[in-house]
Length: 296
Ligand code: NDP
Image (cartoon, rainbow, N blue to C red):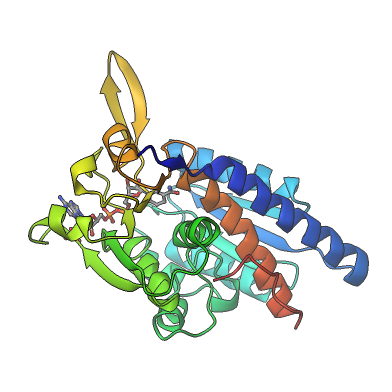
């Protein structure tokens, strides 16, 4: 069998198109323009690229983008004051504080100071609790993107066996909660899991969010399974720096039914879902129906 490649780039373009259309409608019918504020502290090169891309994508779909770049030695009090002012600003519907923050800043305190209704990353403890109890929440962007691709690929997910490899707060755990919300039978695997290969081979849906290049090989995949590779790993091969996932694509693709590539799979969906979350936050803040197909 050769797996169908799930084209995350094309899917993300579709999601951005949906967001753009709904933003235009909000503007035309209600005079409303969703606004997303991104806060960057310091000069981490990767974070600078992410923030630049987020700004460009936000503007492209017609939303207001508010960028706040602060020096690396910004005090916690100053950052909290900025977050509080964004919480109070009615033009700002979504707030994202780019992580990681410099070490002298308490990330949990900062994130938990964001108004949960504006927490487009879904990292606030209230949103974590709401998701865990099956209530309406802001859902972390990467797992939301994975869920959208799975629904698109498989239709209803109820009753399927899902294995999520990785239990981080930003990917593994919320991914597992979302799959449970769609009535999958969910197993969360991690570094202490015994016989990971056997656990993975039981999966109709296999999500890899580990951060170890190509560790999930074809012999760990159930024939016909849908494989979602969240991993982004930079490796040196043939004298070049390459981006690979947590799944060994070549061997997994001959066993799986469908599989996301790296790059071009989950990655592009993350920013698309950030925009979707900002739109959702704007609709909720104004008592409007949520955008169809863009939430969990
Ligand atoms: P973390 O490092 O926070 O978590 C990794 C998880 O993998 C941990 O739960 C760890 O288990 C588990 N793990 C580590 N080694 C093994 C092993 N040998 N067997 C089984 N499980 C193992 O990573 P993140 O969740 O933040 O990210 C995971 C990957 O996803 C990374 O490559 C990251 O770059 C990528 N990523 C991609 C995004 C995108 O937009 N596409 C967004 C976010 C992340 P334990 O808890 O026991 O230590």
